[in-house]
Length: 333
Image 1: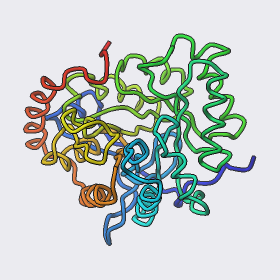
Image 2: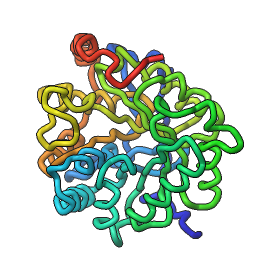
Image 3: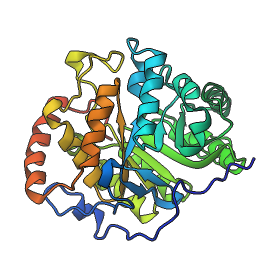
């Protein structure tokens, strides 16, 4: 297969964010996020390099889970959201078989625009047979024969001790990379951060997709466990769950009425927190509606790294929220 397309814009030299992550990622310490490769002047979205992949991705990823899972969001509305995101310049889209109708929506929406984006999907499986079935289904729904990033979905819920054996799922994923069915291999998850380290240190992981927000930083703390290992190996980092997830009081992502756990007043600060973390290339921001997409785009376009004073205030707020939320993504260790 000849799918080895070049990065979406010409490759430029760039400087890696300086300083040790363990210190820089601490809330209240100086932050030094990855440098942008393009200016937001004129309303365009800045881009950063996604680690060793060398892909230049917009600092906002379109997360397809909310509009894919929500029963009160139609396929047609989902298609409109995708087109509006692409028209705004978003060039990375994240989906998965577990995200309801999201892959169907993308398969119908992308068409000729497929070549202009970085497309990521996932495999939720503990056996090769399950993985084969999962990826075949994704290709059929997405109307493609390759994806740019293929994630081992949700390490906190997988049989990781089996995954890297000769007949394991992760080994199978590496074989798919060699076969041209995916350009890069990643791992994703919301909890049990220690599980990520052996995968990263193996040298086989190109991208990690992990839950990081200013509240869960005080519970799961991917910031000080996973990010240092990822930066050491130049693994691309995508931050997800910037808003914590859906507020239990307003329902799951299964409804467009769901509200973010961090609260509406903290949405922009949550985005700034994720994008200020050294090593993070892009924030995966899921939306139910075009209105939510437009709001997120506005916040991303005017992004500025958190100041030390803002970090201090956000740390205090995050600690209080962490007490309320508890380990809501599952066990910590």
